[in-house]
Amino acid sequence: MYAYEALPVAEWFRRNRELAGFHNPTRALYQTIRELTENSLDATETYGILPTILLRVNVEDEQKGWVSVYAEDNGIGIPGNEIPNVFGRVFYSSKYRIKQHRGVFGLGLKMVVLYAQSTTNKPVLVRSAPLKSDKIFEYQIMIDTNSNSPIILDKREYPNKYRWHGTAVKVYLEGNWLASKKRIEDYLRRTAIIAPYAEIIFKGPDLELWLKRRTTKLPPAPKEGLPHPRSVDVDTLKQMIQESRGLTLQEFLMENFDAVGEGTAKAFLEWAGFNPNMKVRALTPEELVRLVEKMKQYEGWRRPRSDWLSPAGAELLEIGAKAILGAEAVFAVTRKPESYGGHPFIVEAAVAWGGQIPPGDRPVLLRYANKIPLLYDEGADVARKVVDEFNWQNYKVKFPAPLAVIIHVCSTKIPYASAGKEAIAEVPEIEKEMRLALRDAAKKLRLYLSRKEKEMEMLNRYITLAKYIDEVAYNLALVTRIDKEPIAGNLHKLIEKKIGLTVDELVKHTLSMSSTQQEMAEAAPQ
Picture 1 (cartoon, rainbow, N blue to C red):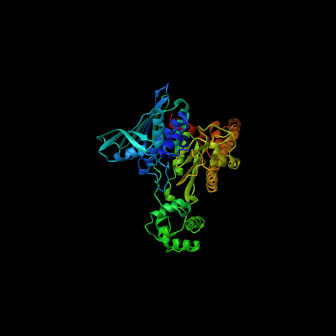
Picture 2 (tube, rainbow, N blue to C red):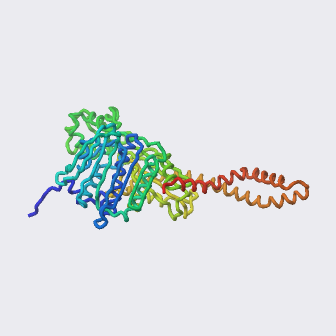
């Protein structure tokens, strides 16, 4: 006979760590850097703090392939009594709210701990101090995978003399530094593009990065909200009903869903054929299914609110792309909010041209979801499809061209193409907004390239006419017995008047590419 048993949730994730991106030592080291960096950004920018993040990787044992990763931030910190659960209990998180998050389940940090202890059998070391705390808390923690609970190996408290606030984490894990080095560098640089307000300092065995803060402007923090009526399924509705405290159906809709007032609730229930005064707990299973179906079909709901979201904004995208890519020019747009399946989303796009961007046969694509750089599975992402199908010739772009495209989707629910969360699926509403955002940004690029073409054409006309000035001035001087220099000067002015710009202005505009490239080269982190 078969022996049946239940597998604890922490143990299940330990055995299936590939689902969280911990496929092998190379991917695991990259994923660890990513999880710690994103937690630091969420602990700072969301609370109006300009992020300063220190990351360090050391090779601890070359033969075993063991490395250590240290991450420290200046965020809001974690209360001492919460540290064990935050680091030692799977699915314990502050992110179970209807608003935009970099992460969703609070799983990534725990997967770092699980992977570390399963490969090196060492605990995670945590030091944290909340804002205005007079104490610093230190823990050494492992996870009991059978009970999904923290194992506290050591705990200390000491005075916070310098009023430091933030969180510092150190883990020991099996990781391949040489194989993951390039991917980690790409990830950090791309993070600095979408978060130019962050200062990121990285030190590795043979790599040091100092990605300076380029602006003190922070994006707006997302607000928490209630679910949209179109976004729930039957199980979600059943859970909500269990906490309804005997409400009527109309009261239930008004209390539990976003932007559903008395008039909207009455209109929907009348349309759907439900009695507004019936108790919501009296709904039969069949009526629950029908209610969910009607909620998804009803056209009278208001659009999901956009203040649940926190787009980067065109200004920050342009600042970040110019600084990190060393682009000659960047043009960015942020589209108006839209929704799919009751989930609000915003698409942003930027096109970066020239400078240090190498010419290629197709645009370099930088993809982001909720400000997270997506580095793997580019071919499966709808953004790659949109960029490749875009008619660049209509926008004066001829390949090979020095062109990079940035596409960012922010939403309360990103529709990932797979469990790895590295590619966005082909949702029609999102694909449409990507095309429109790319079109809007490309229009600005076309105007820029058209102006440069015109300036180059005028400079060429000037050069063509100016090469005869010396000869004409010399001959006129012989005939008129006037000095050559004044005649040459007047001929120069005549040509400038004909063209409409002085030669100095022409040269200044036409050579702007070279000067901008030099400025970006000096400003870009080495």
